[in-house]
Length: 87
Image (tube, rainbow, N blue to C red; front, top):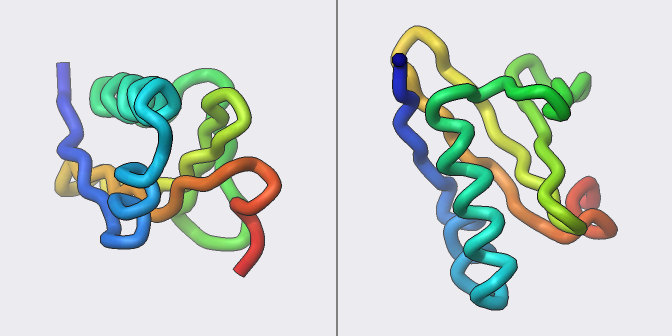
């Protein structure tokens, strides 16, 4: 099975580090599951950009991009659902 490599933007990594331990663990588990299946059921393609996807993990959202040709998934943003779409 093909495994995707996960990368974080500096802002996404900083946000994940600041979260409470149980929330961080759930988010990292969800991100880990995306390495084998980057487009599982329940994931939504965002229309604002060409290659952005969103997955829901409780009250948090993970925005990520997928580069299939080099098998890399980049976590772009992690935030609470009320904050995720604000600029």
